[in-house]
Each structure stands twice: as C-alpha cells, then as structure tokens.
Image (tube, rainbow, N blue to C red; front, side, top):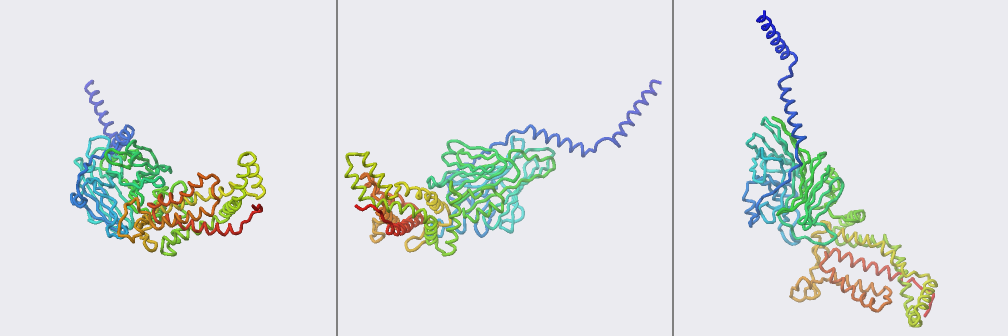
Length: 562
C-alpha cells in the first residue's frame, strides 16, 4: 500500500511538471531575454561615472609628409577641403582648405589638421570608452579595415570596421557634405553572449598651442556652448586648470582666428564636456549614460564634425540646417553681437555690390556717419561754440586769476548767456563709441576681409600697411625692422587726427594741451601694426568727421564779442 501511494505521488508530480512545462512554463527565449534585461539593468544601475579619456600618443620630431606616410590612409575630398583619415586609430588628422592660401601672393594652401605624432598634431578622435578592461575597445593604436569605397566624397560614404577578441565588431560609417561637415555613425555589433556598457565619445586634440593674436577682443583656444551657455577658455587657462560640465545639448570646439574644429554630440543625449591639458589640449565630450549592448545586439551612435573656415554664411548655415544652438558664436562677435553682426551683413552687401572690400569699408563708414549725423551735429555745434568762446574765456581767466570763485561765477554766467554746456559735446560721442568699436571688431575677426586687396600697395586688408615712412615708402632700397614699419595709411590717419584736433577747442590746461598735441603721433605708432582695413576705416572716419565739423563751425556764431 505504501509502495502504491509512493508511486502514485511520483506519477502525479511528474504529470504536474509535464503539464506545467507544456502549458504554463515561460518560453525559453523569454527566460533568456528576461535574464539579459536583468543583467542590463544591473549594469546601468551599478555603472560608474563616464570614464575619463586618456591620450597616450607619443610626439615625434618628424616631417608632415613622413608622418602621413607612416600609416595607411583613406582619402577624402570635396570642392572645399582635401585630406585623409588615418586607419591607425581611425582619426581625421590631415585636412587642407582648397580655397585659402597661407599668403596673399603664395600658392601654398592652408593646412589645419596634422597627424597626431607631430609636435603640431591637431586631429579629431572618436570611439567608445569602457570603465574596465574586461574587453578591448578601439583605441589610438587600433588598425581599422576598409569595407567598400576607398575614397570619401559627398556621394561616396566610407565604412571602417574592427573586431576584437570577444567577437564584437565596431564600425565607423563616415559621410562628407560638399563643404566642411562630417557625419559619423558609430556602430557596435555584439556577437558575444554577454552584455557590455560603452560610452560614445569624441574629442578635438591639439598637441601644442599655436601662435595666437593675443588681443583682448579675439578669443583663440577652447570653446563650447553647453545648454545655451557660451564657455571660452584660453590655452594658458586650461594648462593651469581643467574645465568640466554636464549638459544636455551643445558642442565642443578649438577655435583659431579664422578656423574652427568642432564636434557636435548626438541630439537628446546628455554628455560631459571636458577641456583639459595633459601634455596636449583636448576639447572632448563623452555621453553621461552608457550605451548598453546586449548579447547578439547592435547599437549605434551619431555625431557631427565640422572643420571649417569661419565664413559667416557657412557657419550660420550649419547653425540653422543642423539645428546647432549658438554655433554662430564660434566667430567671436563679442559683447556687441547685436551691433557687430548686422554691421557685417551691411559691409558684405556693399562688398558684393562693389567687388572691393576697401570701398565697402568706406561706404559703411559713410552710413555710420549719416546714422549719427544729428548726434554729431549737437556735439560739433557745442564744440564750435566753445572754440569761439576761447578768447573770452582766456580774458576772464586773466582778469580773475587771483579770485577762483569769481572766475567760476563769470564762466558760468558766460555759459548761461551763450546757452553752452561744456559737457553737451561728450554725450553724443559716448553714444557712438559702441558702434565705432563694433565696426572695428567686425573688421578684425571676420575671415571675409582676409587677402582682400584695396588699391595700390594694399594687397591684403587683413594685414598691416607694408610701406614705411623710414624708407620714404619704398623709395629708398632698405627694409626697416618691423617696429619701424609705419605705413602710408597710418601716417594719413595721424595727419587726419591732427587736423581734426585743430578744429576742436584747446584744453584749458597747458599740460593737457601738450599731451593732446602728441596724441595723433602716439596713435599713429600704435595703429601701424593693425590691419590696414581698420586703419582705412579710421582715416576716412576722421575725414568725414572733419567735413561735417567744418560745415557746423561755419554756421555757428556767439553773442559775446571780445
């Protein structure tokens, strides 16, 4: 009886197990999926912060051509740029601008990106970072393979692939537009049975700081916009202290006066941006949350790279078409953005109208003078009346030189009688200062004036006047040192300032008068190294100012007669 009961219990249990397995047990694939999901959640919940990006590439004393030949490469070209991508690390480290020369009379093109092993190495790196050494991810020494096209053009994207020992394949699919934009899609194809965390990253790396203009109105160095906030860091600042910020949108860049190399992370992905220096300068981003790639799963990440000449139309076009917030700020428009940029569009219109940037500068100067004509009239009328009152003021000073109180009373009575306010000429001038600075800034920072000629000896409005008064503007066969190159336009500017000064009332204090007398000479020497386009603007501004001032002075009279 006990044996029968035992057998019955075993049979019943077996039947229950079989029926459960047939009708109620979860599908085996579902069990595996649930287990993978659990593993994935554990990885996400227990993950560390996004890892730091470490670059260990050694710098060599090597020529550029030899550095290019050291690694296998895939060429890229469109109508604006030409260069190559190194298969050693999959980095963009060779880029030349086809439409820009290094000098106004030379044929050598401007090269921006250089191989990473050079002292002047400057390149774009991207990939997937990991928080441990459990598997091997692509790095700077990885040799990538080419699949399909062997040249990158606007109509022919390329694919780079590499597979590690864990049977995980990494791909880079790179597309190029007809200007300066690279679209990079990074894929991970996980053919293993495990789940892994990967952090997509991109970085602009420069081995050494270049020679910079080092002028306060122009930023050259590391730049980014993070959640709408502009961040600018000079090279020496980053050498002293690194910068890091978490953001949900933005971009990282390294900017020169005329060129920019920028990486724009994928939309709707939070990231950490880092500006740092450890033997080389890096502007990088790395996504804050890992991309979890399960077994037999494929995941991808997209970002954009722009390596461009800072042409306003190009930069604004990318800001709009690629929806990159405040990308136009890679051009250093400065505090007076709302004045400087409209002025550029005005001068660009005149340039397209006349075909000469120098004439465009003169025309924009005339427009500014006309815009401020009423304010300038108030200022000049006040100065003209003050100048006519100089003899009477001198007589009162002589008459009451022993009685300062009486002198002040008589002077105030004179001002009331003539309806003159000594400070009334200052306010209109103060209002014009931001606009004068804005046009100065606009001419200084925009690439559009680079290598543009004027007339005669001015072949490049972005460079200093090449002539010198010390060799009589080239008549004497002698090349003066750079500190003695004071060209014809700086001299004309100084003369125009001296002539304008003669139209204004002399300062009452003799010491001030002597200081003001030497001011035109001082400014001539100071402005001599500045771009000739700026000096031309200043010269013609002085001339137009004097013309207006002379007309006002001839129409101005006073009641008091000496």
